[in-house]
Amino acid sequence: MNPTDTIVALATPSGAGAIAVIRLSGIHSISIASEQFESVSGKKLEKQKSHTLHLGFIKDGKNTLDQVLVSIFKNPHSYTGEDVIEISCHGSQYIQQEIIQLFLRKGCRMATPGEFTMRAFLNGKMDLSQAEAVADLIASDNASNHQVAMQQMRGGFSNKIKELRQQLLNFASLIELELDFSEEDVEFANRDEFRKLLNELEEVLKKLIDSFSLGNVIKTGVPVAIIGEPNVGKSTLLNVLLNEERALVSDIAGTTRDTIEDEIVIGGISFRFIDTAGIRETEDIIEGMGIQRTYEKTDKAQVILYLVSGDELSGNSEKLAEAKTALQKITDRYNEKSVITVINKVDKLCSETTKDLHTHFPNSVLLSAKEKIGVEQLEKLLLSFVETGKLRNNETIVTNSRHYDSLLNALSEIKKVQHGLDDELSGDLLSLDIRRALFYFGEITGEITTDELLGNIFANFCIGK
Image (cartoon, rainbow, N blue to C red; front, top):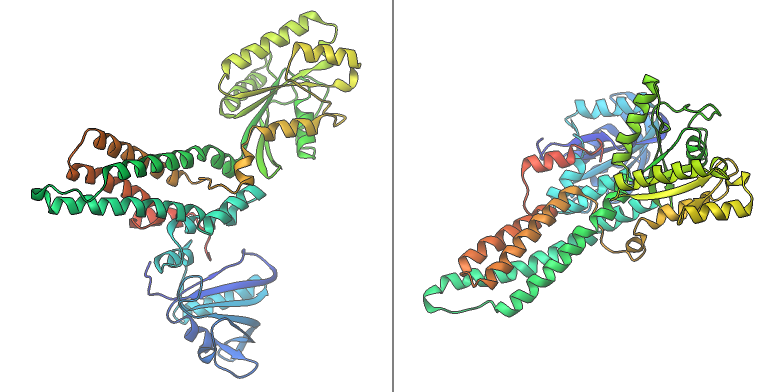
């Protein structure tokens, strides 16, 4: 990857459409585009102002490839900080490839994944955390993902990190200055003020680290396992939640032999529902394998919906006792997870029976998946497990595992500095731990990077961005 090359790529999704956008960036982008462009006004692109649009034709010699609209963005006022040309052409795949191949023959190089955004980072148009937010924004598929990515791309997270780093850097400079006057035993850095700063840093870092649990949910979704005995309505509930016939439904017990997964958005948060095979004693090898997968998927779930069939429990003390025992086993096995008891098929029960079952299973949700009764209440309960208040208050939320690791390391170094102050360590030893903390702060924003790190980050981008 040579940053002096002029690069080209399709900036819109591949495939046929009404229009497509082809992007060029680099020192020769305007001159190369100008040679292949014939404006309807007869003007040359190289002589036009930045941020202007020009109608004309892309020509390969005497052959006209397409009528296009060309946008000019001159450095440094462009996405990459370089001269950028964007060509809006008709969305034929043939036209797209012909124009790109033309520019490749005229001296451009095909852009690698994320190279436009990498150049924006290298040219100081955004820091590394903002660059990563670009990929998150492109991948956002619900309101929460979009909100967090937009906040990070606008610099909400990186500005907070930069402020913390600068405060720590100021004290680091004073402590290191003391080393130059060690023989005179002077103290430039007020230790009380420094201790106060470290306490503030610790508090902010802990808050950011704690936000990752919500950030991870926003980014990856909440895995929810629907479990219970055969024929209690697990597949019907999945179909109702998804609003489509995703799972086969039958009166025959044991219809679901494998897990079925799908995702929906509730209140801007993604929930990944997993319909599992009914849990029971069986000699059927295939069904037994499905039940084993039920436990494997439940192990990975964050929330468990334990379904019981209300009509089977009504007036049957033996079944009621079995259901309570089974629920207790599930609760004991997954004591760190949220387990919700769902009493299904309440449409078949009278109100007195329903109240009686609710007494036996307190805090349960009463619903009829078939008649779509109580489903909204279940959705509200699921949403209550996610701290959406932080989103509503527009607080900074960490969603990136790389940032999370760096914050953990920075907090560890801050604690070492605090212990060093308490033990009255010398300035040179304090300085080492401070420098390590600064290093981890710098890793987040990209003030400290390696080629390997940048390669790993931008390799996950799509080509053309």
